[in-house]
Image 1 (cartoon, one colour):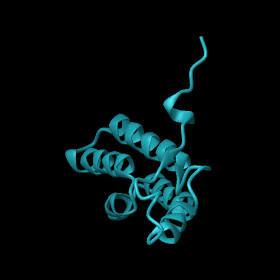
Image 2 (image 1 turned 180 degrees about the vertical axis):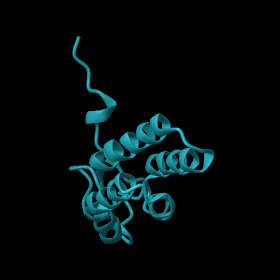
Image 3 (image 1 turned 90 degrees about the vertical axis):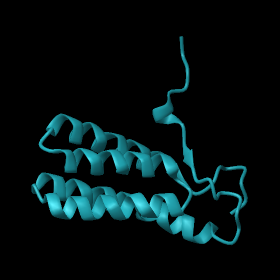
Image 4 (image 1 turned 135 degrees about the horizontal axis):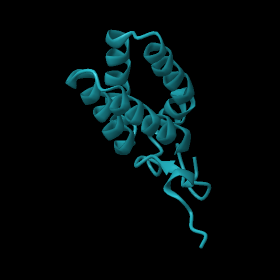
Length: 113
């Protein structure tokens, strides 16, 4: 049985059809790999304060650019970090952010940019 998994489905901005912000959404999506890299660097360096700052910024920006699913994932990572020392929960939340950010698209192929 072959079905398209959620992890393979593009995550398109809720603002994909708004020409007034399409350039900004494209820029946000283009910057996601560097944001994820910064999160991973902070995590690997055990920079909890830096990681909290970065994930808080991602949470707000993702919501502003039409990616509430990324906002929810960032909120979960933020919660995991502030709740205490649960490396498995932090790792799981980080994996979700990474996956969602890799799937993020400013628009669908049918959506004019």
